Image 1 (cartoon, rainbow, N blue to C red):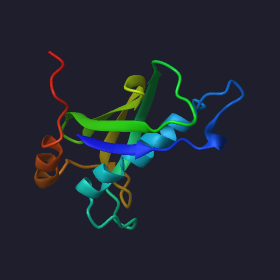
Image 2 (cartoon, rainbow, N blue to C red):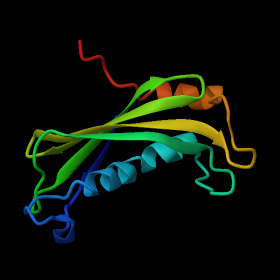
Image 3 (cartoon, rainbow, N blue to C red):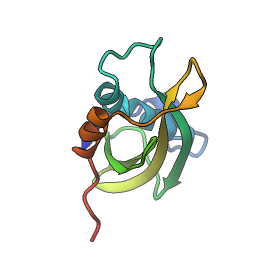
Image 4 (tube, one colour):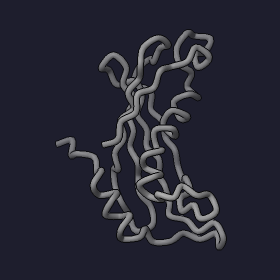
Length: 133
């Protein structure tokens, strides 16, 4: 599991007084930084190997300004060319949002998908989400 503490900023609130729905995808992307380093330690752009294929966010409750938010992240599943990264936002010990991002191993020069390298697959497997059962 990866975990990142975020201090909500006042400008992230919306007209309803809670953290806006466009903020959570940004927080989740920020919390993927450790994953990016795991997949591509050099963090160089010219040979970046990932592309986002899908992002889904579910809101379970309101998130507010003035209290830290913990974003917890796991690898949910690993396929041949892609994997699913699952994330949750918690505030005051309560789940406020969850989401999944499908990331594909990608060659930008050729515009094609590639198999996830075995060494990356092994590192991803170390962060598999525990079974809910």
